[in-house]
Every structure is written in structure tokens, then in C-alpha cells.
Amino acid sequence: MSFERTGAGIGLGAEQAPSPSHATLTSAQGTSPSLRLQILSTEHWSLLASRSLAWNESFSRAGMFLTTLTGAIVALALVAQASAFGDGFTLFALVILPVVLFIGVATYIRLGTSNYHEGLCVIGMNRIRAAYLELAPDLERYFVMSAHDDLRGIGITMGVQPGGGRLFWVAQMIAGTPTVVMILDSVLAGAIAAIAALRVGAAPSTALLVGVLGFAIATVAQSWYSRQTIAKAQAGQHPLFPTPEG
Image (cartoon, rainbow, N blue to C red; front, side):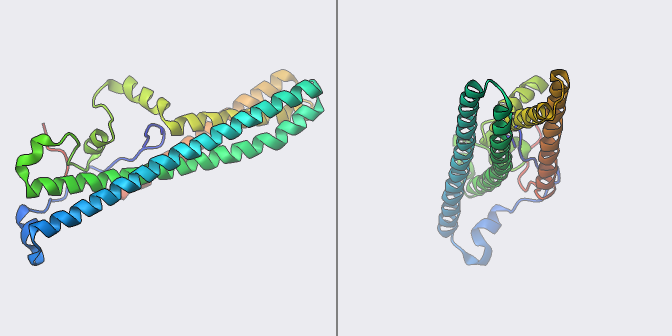
């Protein structure tokens, strides 16, 4: 989210490679244009189905995490009423909250993988769209999605509005599902740290500081993981059909 789809996204390098010519598409190895079109169409639909599966997995994993978190909060509220926030509450919280945090971290990592997979599918579909235009250049005005596999072209196909300034991009990142999951994970880490501090007899003010520190450490760790993942994705992808200047 968050690629992010806001929080966890994929970018491409600025290196430019020459695109295949129309003659290459229509005459290499004697393959007919109709057969090439059939192959391209089949691959296009395969990528579209794969992208749909990535979306479905992202939503299902995020929904599973939120459902688990909601159930844990309800259970903690019931235990708090029964134990008056005593030792039983803190012990129960230190048992159930780490489990929820584990599910949240696993969800965050999987969302990043799904976003990367979706980005690859978009790159492939944009390249196939470029092949369509090489076979039939007069159809370009009918296409609303991009036929370029650089960062701008990927953004157009993924529905990211161009422009908007820095504030717009920050808002898009905050609204992304990976970012939401990352913040919830950090809150859980902070709550676990604060409750553990109370459990060992720390003062409420000290426990609050420990909780804030736990939140900050979890946020920095997850952000560092996202940056490393995005950097690896950028290093492995180079546009073959960059957006023309102007």
C-alpha cells in the first residue's frame, strides 16, 4: 500500500533500451501477424487474471488481519471488565497481542509481495499494449491505458493520477493498505511494550514512554524493509518502452 498501492510500490530505472521494430514483430522467424496477435492476447489475459488474484489476496489477507485484531480487542475488553485491569488482564494481553502482531507483520510482508507481483503484471500488460500499437498504430487514440513500461506509464495503468504535488503523493501513501497495516502493527508493538513495562512494575509515565519507543522502532523497521524491497525491485527492472518526452 502504501508500490504502494500506497506504502509498499515498485519503480523503474531511467535506463532506456531500444524497442523492437514493427518489421521484427511481423516477420521474425516467419510468424504471421495473426498468430503473434493470438499469442499476445493470451499472455495479456493471463497477466490480467494474475493481477486479479494478487488484488484478491491483498484484500483477503488484510481482512483476515483486521478481523483477528477486532476479535482480540473485544476479548481484551471482556477480560478487563472481569479483572478490573489487574494482573490477569496484562497476562492475557501479553499472550494474545503478540499473536495478532505476528499476523499483522506477515500480512504486511505479503502485501508487499502482492504489490510487486501486480507491478510486474502491469509492466507486462503495458509492453503487450505497445506490441498491439506496433501491429496497428492507428488504434492508439482508442487506448486509455499506457503502452509504456516506465514509472509514469505504470502509474497511468494503475490509476494513479498524475501531478498533485508532494502532498498528494503523501496522502496516497497514507491511504494505501500496506501503510494502514504498518501503522496498526506499530501500535500493537507499542501496546505490547507498554503493557510489558507495566507488568514488571514500571510507572505509568515510564510505560507510556516505552510504548512510544516501541511504536517508533516498529515503524522504522517496517519502513526500512519496504525501502529495501523497493530498491531491489527498481534495480531489477528497466523500461523497454519509456514515455516519450513531452
